[in-house]
Amino acid sequence: MNQIVVRRFATVCLLLLGLFFLFVPSAAAQGIPVLLYHRVNDQETDWSLLTVSTAEFSRQLQLLRNHGFQTITPEQLGAFMREEQVTLPDKPLLITFDDGHTDNYTQAFPLLKNAGYSATIFMVGINFDRANRLTSAQIRKMTANGFSIGAHSMTHPILTKLNTPKLQAEIRGSKKKAEEVIRAEVGYFAYPGGFYNLATVEAVQLAGFQGAFSVLSGLNQPNRDNIYLLRRIPIFRYTDFDQLLEKLIEPPSKPSLLDY
Image 1: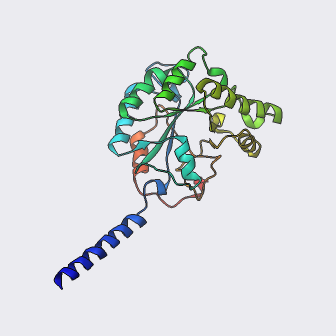
Image 2: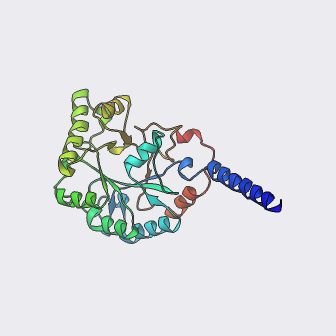
Image 3: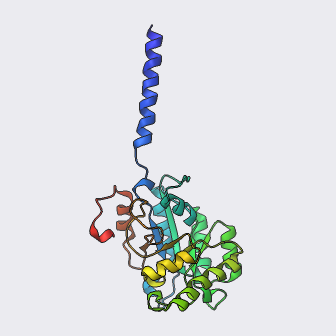
């Protein structure tokens, strides 16, 4: 009789434990962060505000690793946003770079690989094989190591100021150019300067992109956010990364109007 009671008690405990894990929200359920970088180097340039030093970038990656963050691809984020079945790490994170500067390969790439991380590079169409920009060979080496390539327009204009033919040429042209280089489909777009309106969003959809990135702040949540207005957190030279990390690891606060 005692054995029966013990077995029943054990069964109830297992059921309760299963329900606990079923209803405890994961970090992904609270929203997925996307970090936006531009350059990583130790040179003083006109882009200094957009440049993070190699030492600081390495420190930031180590902090993210120490707190259990693991990088994902835009495709995984897209599946999460569409509420499709997708396997995600406990603390998913997407790291992105805009424009396609050479130091994304010479400086950031080895540091990311050393941390066990990947990233997505949003390339401006005219920047392929341009001086001080990524070469096609460098890009293909990065994609062979798990990195992703996205499109960032052909010439980096303010898309909201363009007429329809020019707008379509900028968006469609950048997709075609990137696909020619990596010899694979390019599914995601980043709005130059973060500027967008209804026409640009529609043009991105019509061009066949699966989603697009803005510079709206906050975490990406399926029940709130549009997959063509994905949120990113810009990282500048003077960003207080320790303070940012605290916000990423603490329970999410109630959304405010500034989040929309």
